[in-house]
Structures are given as structure tokens and as C-alpha cells.
Image (cartoon, rainbow, N blue to C red):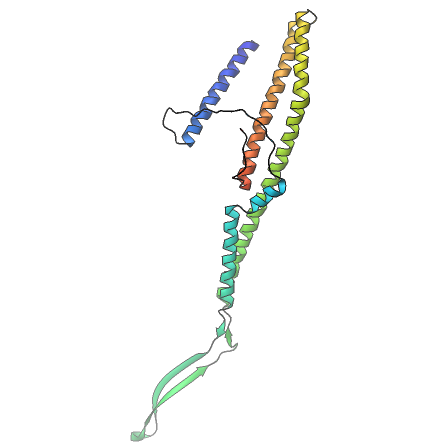
Amino acid sequence: VDAERSRNQITLSGERLIQARADLAALLQLPPGSLPQADGTLEAKPVPYSFESVLSSAADQPRLRALELREQAARNVLSLERASAYPDVTIALGTGQEGPGGSRERIAMLSVSVPLPLFNRNAAGIGRATSELTQIQIKRQAAVRDVQAQVRALWQRLDSLHGRLVRLSSSVVPRLDENQRLSAQSYRAGEIGLLQLLLVNRQLLDARRDYLDAVTEYVQTRIELERTAGLTGAAGAN
């Protein structure tokens, strides 16, 4: 029964592999029938960067830079609106006639109207520019906060996964390998039964599976961290 279950798991893994290759081919827009083949080994390599450099790269990515430039443009618009205050003086020029009967004279009239207060404060334009600047500032601050929170969470997760991999590779798996080797010798010598040997083998297989799952999660977390922080030049895992 265990052997058949193992063969079934192998078949399921093969089907997942075919589907993953098909999804990758569709993403890369390869010709029909062309399925990419993965090459190399899956390794959890140490990251070549520090947490400070990750935060610095995250703050300098294009999306945040674009928001920063939009904020600066809104500041310039607000400064322009504030500089648009001018004296609100109305000047009127007219002509008319003045005097009795046939001796009326044609005169030109110039009038100046000065309201109180004297200056047009451009309150509408300044208020509109202030509102736009505030909205962009809130949007930029939220984007910076979200990126930094994601980077911190992914970095902590990556560090935790690295610690788990160290424990599995340096302690758990080697001890189970040695236990399996000694159990095989004991089985050949008739000191233990088949069920005990199968139990030891199952423990070793489960530990190796846990290690592979942790390596996969480590690599995926590292890729997500580099994508979030905009580390386009970082070396990925093979």
C-alpha cells in the first residue's frame, strides 16, 4: 500500500511539473508544444545584501520616485498660486459731454475702484492647490509605509527560514541519515523488524521533504523580497 501511495505521489508531482512548465511557456509566449526545462539545483544561498541596502533600494524604486516628483510638482503649483495674489484695482475709462445747450464739451473720464481688502488673495486657487498637494502627500506616505512594512516582513520571514534550513541541514537530516544507516545494518543482522526499518525510512523521507519545502519557500520569499525592494541587480538562486 505504501509503495502504491508513493507511486501515486510521483505521478501527481509529474503532473504538477507539466502544468508549471505549461504556465511558464504561456507566460514567456513560447510556441505551442515548447515547454521550458528547468536546469540547475535548488539552493538556499545567503543573500548578498544587508537589510539597510534593501530599505534604501525600496525607497528609490520608480513607483515611489514618481510619487515624489508628483509631490514636488504639486508644491510648485501651490507656490505659483500663492504668488498670483495681486492688487484688485478696477480702472474704467469713458467719454461724455458736459455743459449747457450748444456749448457742451466732450470730456474723457477715468475712474479707479479700490475694494477692501486691497489685494486679491487667490483663495480659490491656493485652496485647490493645497488640497491636491495634501492628497499626493498622503498617497506617497502610504506607499512608502506599505513598501517598508512589506520589506521588513519579508526580511524577517527570510531570516526565519534561513534559521530553519540551518537546523534541518546541520542537525535533523544528518542524524536521521545516520539513524537510517544503523537501522539498515540492524535489520540485516536481524536485530529489528521490517516495520521498524520502514518507520526510520519514513522519518528520513519526511525530514528531507521538510527541507525541500523550506528551500522552496526560502527561494520564493527571496524573489518576492527582491521584487518588492526593486533589487533588479541581485543574484537569484540557481
